[in-house]
Length: 242
Image (cartoon, rainbow, N blue to C red):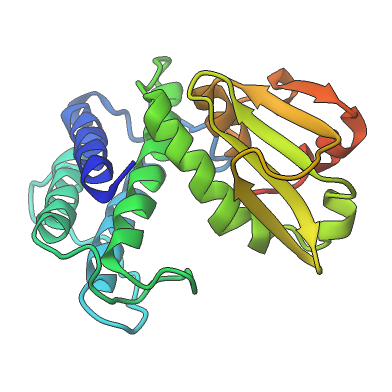
């Protein structure tokens, strides 16, 4: 996906959450975010939208502030306003503009378009699941999210790469055709997109199932493992995301 496609997908997921505002029950527990309620998730996501917006305006890390609601404003209305502010900023920005991010490889506004898309999509899945419905996620969005997860989060979450990835693995999205080679290299986890290098095993599924499973929103045990199972299970047992 390019930045324009990501922005449109972000606009759609924010609209889905905001549009369901009146139907969200604040006190309902969110099983996929242990210890959190619907209100906690919406509060977190709205504040992160505002934090990300602020991050695009400069090169220093912004402060994540508390929720500030006007008199009579509902949680859903407050979230919709936060999403609107984020979208207005991103829509009018040059995605190549320099700003603060937590990715040393990408210090641009485009980072935040992608990051907010997947932050929002995963939490929309959380909210939908809490209410017994399924969030609509396209394979294209899921494919992009897998790529982000493997390049942004996995290298920083695995403390012992040699143990977690004793041998190279492939991760394949069977519907989009994307494949990533994941391996340990000089003490770091490295993910390379494409059919590169020899692997001993492969983790495969449709893009949406892979995306949700790697984010801990669906059972990883449901993913198909081809080849040597032990290295794949070691990788899947890791805490891959925050």
